[in-house]
Length: 152
Image (cartoon, rainbow, N blue to C red; front, side, top):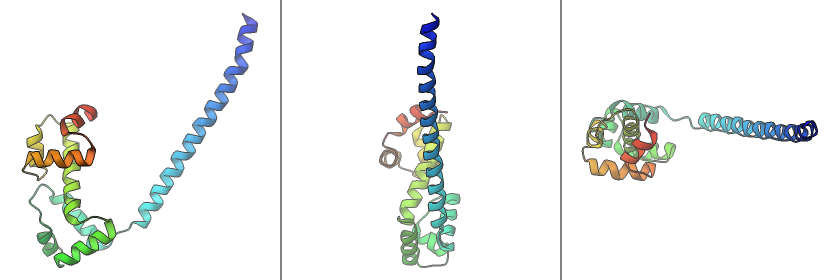
């Protein structure tokens, strides 16, 4: 038995070292990825107009928000808001509104037992079928499947 254990011990040590090395490599990748995200975030500083629009949308998403009303509330023309928002974020204010609503719907799906129709209305999308269609496009699965998979 002793030669068997002694024979296995160096092998286990070797595997342990390579395992530790792979953990360190993965840890290094994670830290590098995190640093890249921070750097990217710092470079993506938005203008006051876009930040104000994003804040307004995040606060008012359950309400009936139109881009025209948003522009009026921010004291700019609709075209100016759309142009600046698209340039800085890569999407229109309308698509951002929809993404915020779908994201909030996902949170409700994973944390409540509310029906999809209720959640759809709560996030500002009165048509549940449209909510399901947009949700599936954004998350690659239906709201019901999402709930089953991500249920907390």
